[in-house]
Image (cartoon, rainbow, N blue to C red; front, side, top):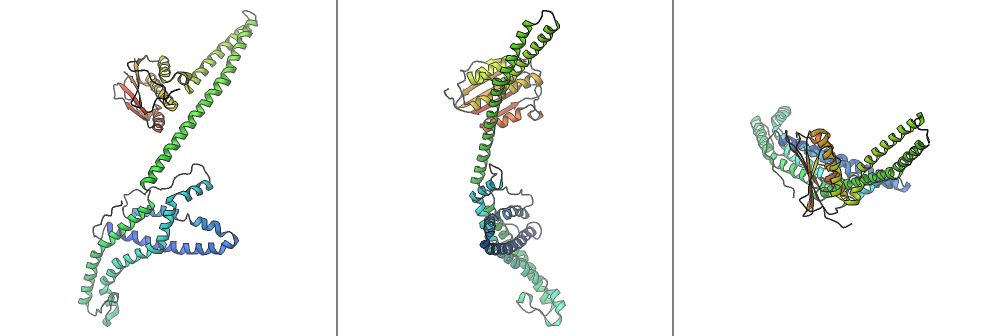
Length: 425
């Protein structure tokens, strides 16, 4: 429920902002009324030639730009307040048709259209009436001495209320108008606050819509991660079944050609060099394929893949084998945890100056926990391009959490927690 705070009656600060909010609202509502009447009439006339039909359809979305302007106009009451975010979602596919279909399905679109109609027919006359009663009427009374000086001896009737034909009466009328202005500032500010609360209620995002938007963002991130993982798998298969097999065949052909070449001749030497280079390229390609998605992870699970990464680390790594072996976990979980371990070990070898590292893994109470500990110099900062930021985003899609503790002087401890359940394969 939106609460209404009653402003203090004063001439500086909230009162001028309330007046500015209501006056601009009245002007905007009058403009919307005139423009809307013209467009509706024009659409009705053009329906007979079918041009008016799309114009009428476009009028159903006329509340969207007006609502965006109204959300920004709320800052007239509180300049320090950030503009309210839009309640509209981003279409999953680009293009005007997708955008139009999504907008027609959203409740926010119809609330904004209802607000547009209310502004044009009801709200702006109320705004103008409140400003006239709270500001214009006291202003006429305050100006009584000036009016009397202009009118002369005939006297005046301020706001058509009573006859004032002397300066003492004019002065008393001006004081009455000033007192009335100070008194009326309280309901004026209260109305402006209530008016803004009503606008915010209709046009600002609601909790359910924010939750839906957040859920949609989470689903979108999950789809991106799945697509990225599928693309990694495709590249790994193409390299394994295509380029690697061709390199193996090339290496075999070079080996056979060496056997046919004259012993000790220049041809044999060139073939030997080419054979060695092909072997090096094949080794690098196999390392690249293993880095994209190691076969040991797919075949034997996370424990075997982590042990394989530890064996290939440039820094000696101890495996914590006190707990039970890990069960097979969902494929995205195993892949994310494995690449976190690989990145952590790579950072240990490149930056930490550590002499030893330790990896501990455990799965209990539906949570996978992985910890990488090293005895290096510490001071690790994920913001300096260690690659952990991207992995943390990847873990967030799985509702996981990455924690890095690295005080200057060490030690550095990287912890990962991913909620998941074991599965049978």
